[in-house]
Image (cartoon, rainbow over all chains, first blue to last red; front, side):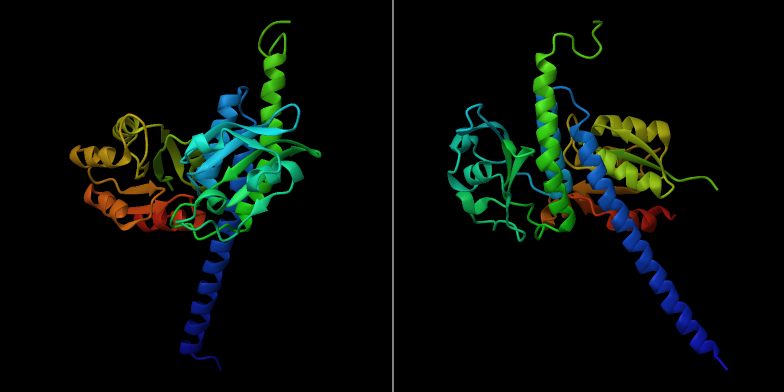
Length: 193
Length: 123
């Protein structure tokens, strides 16, 4: 015979389990929404300035860093040129030779450099970099996104952040290439042929 | 049952889309504003059940907007959640001093935001 006390305990346990499942489902929804919103935001623009602003917005709002730089590889694939930055001293990063430092290395090798724990608050130079993400289409590196220190309350990069960085690698590259090609079109979309 | 209405004010398109997605999927109606001044106008016009205010916005920041909302008769009792990129004590204290009820930090944590919304206005 089950007692009233035992039933109440079981109910409490079930309620707690349901609450945990609900939180897990909401977390899953938020994670999926982050990825969807990032892709949508990157491909919603026709001009380069808007795409760069979208990358910055995604890094700040979804990953949690207000310090970043976006670089483009020159046509000869020798140097990186700074396209946009936020929260860092841009003078130090105007041009970087491929292979130089973490940023140049990411551009040369096409491999992302990631510090999952994030750069420390006191770090400077390459030590202040949390992630260098090459923007790639196929094997061709079009540029690099460098994420420096994370926001103080953000302990490190989680699995969704890593997914977002991976997504930025391809989708930011495609979005930037598209704006370049769109700018070269004789008859942009919306203009009668 | 009438759905609860939430006003979101943020100049970041990504943050607005994220918050709108989370809240509308949880059966809340959502209206949006892009800066502090628009937030005050929308709050008066739409009479939302809750306002989620970003701190850093053009024209009028979230602190100033919250202070104004607390002065106006139609909006003074509407609960406000501040959204900030800074979780340090003094930023949070500033929010409570101008009259916010709670705060969340960016990047937005979905379950945390929804939990705070439910605490203030229910399901």
